[in-house]
Image (cartoon, rainbow, N blue to C red; front, side, top):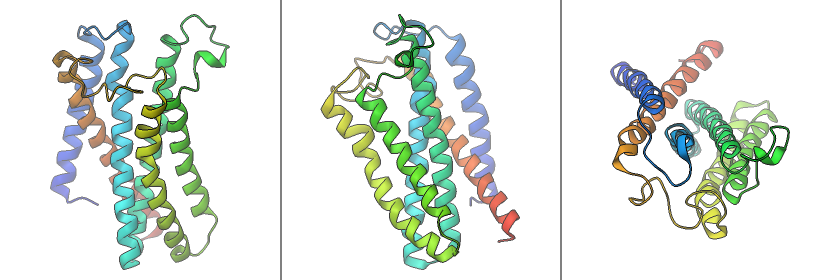
Length: 232
C-alpha cells in the first residue's frame, strides 16, 4: 500500500512511540486526573485505540468510495483490510474500557458480577453498536461468492457504517450524558482543565504511535492477502 521509504518510516515511528507510551505510561508519575488515581494511566492506551479505529475506518471508506468510482478490486482489498484492522482496534478499545470500568465504576463489585465490567453507559453502549456495525460488514462480505458483487455491496454498506461512527461514538453519547468522561461536557482529551501537559507528553505520542502501528498492520494484511491470492 505504501512506498518502501514511507513504510520504513511508519515502522520506526510505531516501534519508538508505542515503546515510549508503554514504558513512560507505566513508569512515569501519573498526574492527578479527578478520582481515577493510578487507573488514569489507561488513558495512554484506551483512547488511542479509538483514534486508530477512526483512522482505519476513514481509510476504509475512502477506498470504498474509490472502488465505486473505478470498480478496481485493488481498492476493495484496501477498504476491507482497513475495516478489519479498524475493528480489531475497536475491540481493543472496548476491552481496555471494560478493564477501566472494573477498577473505577465497578470497584466495589465482585469479579463475577457482569456490572463490574460493563455498566451500559451510553458511550460504552454506542461504541459497542459501532463495532457491531462493522461485524455486520464482514458478515455481508462473506455472503457473496462473486468478488465484484461482494465489493460493490460491501462498499455501499461501508459508507453508511462509517457515517454512523461519529454520531454513535461522539454525538449521541454526549447528548445523553452518563458516567463516561466527556459524556456531556466535551472531550476530556483536548480539554485543558481535564488533562495537563504532563499527560500530553505521553498521550499524544501514544496516539501517533498506535496509529502508525495500525498502518503497519494494515500494510502487512494487504501484502499477505496479495500473496495468498497471487495478486500484484
